[in-house]
Length: 288
Image (cartoon, rainbow, N blue to C red):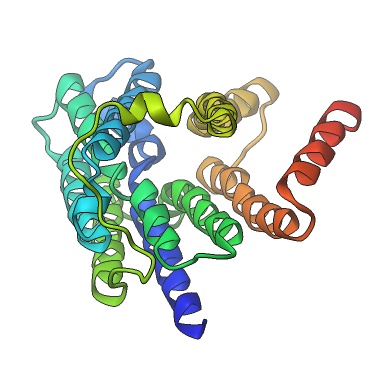
C-alpha cells in the first residue's frame, strides 16, 4: 500500500508538470499578439486548436489502444516530450497564426497521451479506492492548467519565450519522472488489436452513456471559463478602473478547483457518488 501511495504521488506530480502545456499560450497571449501581430480573436482560436487536438488525440489513442498495447509510462513520457517540443516551438520568430494553430493542435494531440494515460496508469495500480485516486489526478490537472499564469506573474523579469520554454522543460521533467519511477502496474491488462466496433459497444452501456454525455457537456463550459478568466479580469479592471495582478489572480481562480477535486473525491468515497451529486445539485439550485 505504501508503494501504491508513492506511485500515486509520482503520477500526481507528473500530471501537474505535464498538463501545464495545456494553457501555456493563454498565459502569454498578449505577448503572442504583440510579437506576431495577431488579431484579438487569437485567444479562442489558439484555445480551440488545443481542444480539437486533444479530442482527436484521445479518439486515436482509444481506438488504437495505445496505452494498452504499449507500456503506459513510456507512452506518457513520449507524449510529454513531444508536447514539450511543440510547445517550445511557439518561441520561433518565424511563426504565423497558422503555424501557431498547428503547434497548439499538435500539443493537444499529445496531451491525450498525458492526462488520460496518467489515469490509465492509476487504474493499473488501484483495484480499490480508484475514485479517490482519480480525484487527486484531476486536481493535479487543474493545478497544472493554472500554473502558466503563476509563472507569468513570478517571472515578470524574464521574456515570454523563457516562460514557454520553462513550461516545456517542466513537462519533460514530469514525463521522465514517471517513466523512471512508475513501471507497469499489477492490474494492467494488455490490449488487443484495433476494434472499431468498440465505439458502438461501449455506448450500449446505459450507465457509461449517461456519465459520458454529462462529461462531454462539462468539458465545453469548464475550458471556456478557464480560457477567458484573464480576459474577464482585464475587462472588469478596465470598466471599473481597478488594478488587478491579472496572472496571479487568474492562477488562484483556476487552481482553487483542485481543492474541490480532492475534497469531492473524498466525500464521494465516504457517502457515495450519487448522494454527493444530489447534494451538490440542490446546493447549486437553492443556495447559489
